[in-house]
Each structure stands twice: as C-alpha cells, then as structure tokens.
Image 1 (cartoon, one colour):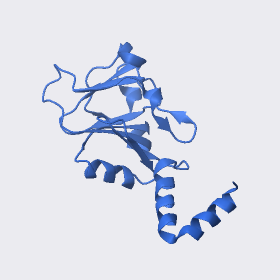
Image 2 (tube, rainbow, N blue to C red):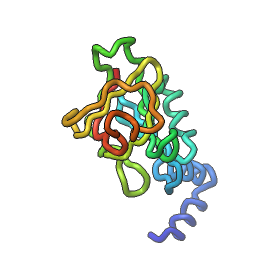
Image 3 (cartoon, rainbow, N blue to C red):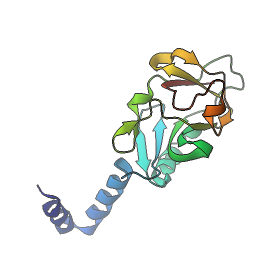
Length: 168
C-alpha cells in the first residue's frame, strides 16, 4: 500500500485515528536531529522523540525516575539516551544497582546505535556510572563518574569508547 493510500485510509477512518497514528509515528521513529530516547530498565521499553516530551511522559506515568543520560556530543548536546528505573541508586559505589550489558541494543538516529558513541554523561538520583570498553562489562573500564561534559578529558579519553555500563 502506498503512503498516499495509507493516508487516505487513515483520514477516512476518522480524525481520532489520525492523531493516534501521528503520535505513535513521532515517538517510534524520529527523523534525526536531536533525538531523545528513554529506556525503562525494568521493562526494556524504549520511547524516542525529537523533544524528549514523550520519553518524559512515559517515565512520569510509570512512576520512574531518571538514573543517567548519555549524549553523543560534548557539553550534554546532540542525541541523548536516558535510562530510568523504579528507585534511586544506593548512596555507595560498593554495589551495582543497574546494568546495561550492550549499548548496541539501543538505536541512535535512523541507522546507528549507542555503541562507542558517548561523549558526555550526567547522572541523577544518587547514581554514578562506570563505562566499559566492551559489551558485557569487558575490557578497560572507567572509575565511577557522576557527570562529565567531555569524556575526551577523562583518564586517557573515554570519548566514543563505551559499550556497556553499570550504575551504582
């Protein structure tokens, strides 16, 4: 079915349907720009949009809180990926509260993923993040980071190196 015929079918079925389709399209497949995605670490659900509004709504509606946001550019700019969960991290780094085993599993833009794409990071709700160079927490790793606007400056440059992460 062509896009023209699909649009005609949607319009013919009613305006309410058109609004739902438009919202789902915006959330599920942003066209680029400064896409913002949010991942629910409890369920694995991912919501993306250009402004981050749908992502924030999903987190708020589910009673989830922000844990960490990674950015593709320095100074907390560009595309972002926020992980949310049901509870804050513990006040100590002696235990791991949340894990992300493989950043390749998260879409970045139309054709990419988040493996080796993190350039800045900020944490929330008592969390600190530790990055690993390989998936499944392998390879070199960082210390615990609360926030860093330019990972090039972090201990031998961690710009575009993260493949997995832990939160504590």
